[in-house]
Image 1 (cartoon, rainbow, N blue to C red):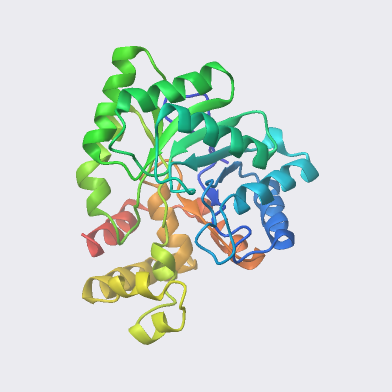
Image 2: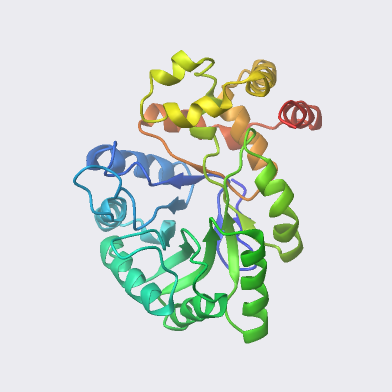
Length: 313
């Protein structure tokens, strides 16, 4: 298993990160534990969640995912085998915030739910543009100095604010962002490739994108609006991919998959693995997990990568 360094930090992650957004939402605790055990037992080590998961579900207040992961960590004894990444900044009842005082309170709440003494990678879930970047990075600096956080990361931040944050950290001698969590996959490419990729390469920033399978579109299960309507949870997101460009992408994935006797999901993730640090993937069953865990073993040729890249250009 090839482990990849996350930015210039000491954190090293396997080429897939397990997304915890489903834990406590549409995956119960028992199944969540089984998925987490299977993921780590297969040699993978990074788990991503957020304090707001799954506040959107009826009757939920947020923290459900962190709570399940915390219970699993305590029951399994596998804390030393995993990199725990979580996020703050989404509205948890008082609006989105990355102010220094809020960061302290949010981190304390996440540490309690996760039942750990430190968070390996602590990330802004959404940027708060009303807060100066210097204040946010100072908040991270305090957490790192206190040993509560290992490294900082960002998600849903503009390229301009991302660059400003990196400059502020350098200027003030504060911890910098070691990772970026952008939207990036074979279908959603322009935002990352035009706005962030050059920054991440220049500054040696780890990239752990979400929606690596484009809400399930890149699994090849959805080819029409009727297919999307059959999945009310993802239907609205899927429909934006159901066009001529989407068909070209699925055709290219199918061609490469047939060549390697692989699934579409494995091919789509292998393309990402060839371009970034590690994609985040969420699953709701052990069968889905078994499928995606084969993606890092898929050795795509330069021709394969070119075929896939050209289809979604």
